[in-house]
Image (tube, rainbow, N blue to C red; front, side):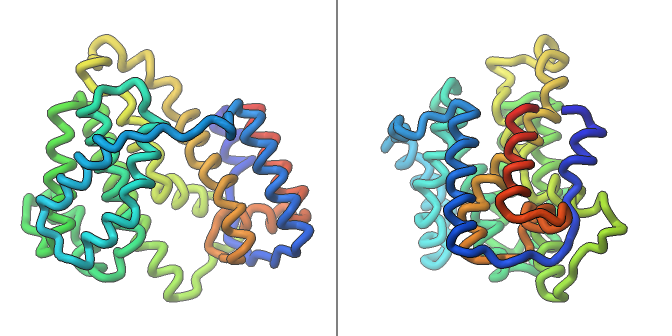
Length: 283
């Protein structure tokens, strides 16, 4: 997908959404099912499970002394984080899978429980840069984890992970501010929703984790995987959006970019989502 096409086709606009009817809900489910089939995702194949990976990730977070409330939040997304890792990073060594699952879990926690330490989160990037204490156990652990990844990833991938983690955190804060202010992007600022989407999607982090330096030394492989980075980022972000639409249609949550885009197209939910799915599969 070219940059121009990506921007013109998927430049989401912050417009009000419409409510889904029961009929539309069924159509949306059908479109998501067709999308999964078109990208050759075998829904009948059982998900990979690895109790050893789950135990290793749980042991890591237990060692952080996060407190009972945060530990419960960790446990709530533990299976999700390890399952995502096992499906996405099938060829990586076990030690790398642990790091990937830990990274996913930290990002889930930033998204899910950020309101309980929003002020500390607001200063995370600055404190990380200055090597200051974060005054929050979870954020101190996240800081150490991000630095530790440098042992496993080369300069380009490691710096991309850190840069994208900063974007992810800042994007989460911006989303909160937007929700509090009931802020909606004007249709005249056509690039801003897409700009924010690339921050909160964390796709560059997830894709950079694919290339540990032990398997893909950057002096040999960087210019081989670099050309596909943007394609992978767009695929990751918009696959997430398409799949999320099944949940969104139940909640009618106006902050989701995909519904904003469909409204911008001035199409029905069915036609708008079909347009996005068809274009996404083709590219």
